[in-house]
Image (cartoon, rainbow, N blue to C red; front, side, top):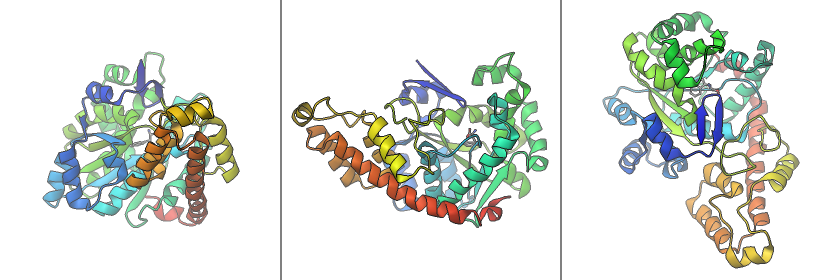
Length: 369
Ligand code: TRP
């Protein structure tokens, strides 16, 4: 059983089944070729099919090739600290921004988790908005081409278009799409209208239609399944979408990293020794129970979480990655050694990230719309 909504991801995730269920298109080799024409190289998240699915990407490139440039839109509902899983779509979004030289609108729906989480207050989200912004800036988005939009702060810009979206979505659609019910609060029922707005707000502000591409983790697709039907009715382009997989939790190869448990999650602010001990203690291993057996029969990198983190985030070099894969499979590389490789990679990344996060404190104002 798999259950995937924007607020809940449960069970073993079968990504090819999601493509069928949600009616998206797999990323094909011809599409990769077409992207490469413009980007010169391909990000490993594309070639490894970590971004595995899309909606209307070919249309987006048709427009781009007619000199009708798109903008990027993605977001983060501030409700806790940033962990490694969050970084997957954002690192890729930065790559897209650099390669296509386009604007990015980054939404902080600071009301979303207030209406979805029982104990979360606006005071909490205000704090997390500030903290989370530092992580986004630290990833290196172009300050001249990136704007943050915060739902409560920019409500004056957003309320009218959100209501126009809301007018065209029925309660029964929201119930069927998100698993909400008669007991759901009004904020929850309305929220998807707010997430729709940044997909066409630049078209309103610039008084001309601009194509939009939304990179997201597949759980967020539901919002756009609904709003892609509505946005054209308001006179704007249907946004194109590109979907990523979830980074698995430390505890197992299935499911996703989440902030609900401290143990199975590596935060961007974790110290080197915390990272080391979390990976050593918790990272689910595809190794054999004893050293002799591992040397003889080899491990299983496909279910090994440390290997998956290297594949999805930390080892961009295909040759190095496949050597690790083969060595682990043959048994010449031990689990403890594989974990060492990952620990080094994560800590090298986090050291730089944490420095850039400090510097970001002075830059926040430049990014706010
Ligand atoms: N709902 C997303 C979250 O929970 C935040 C978000 C807002 C978003 N707009 C988006 C995510 C657009 C992807 C694309 O974090």
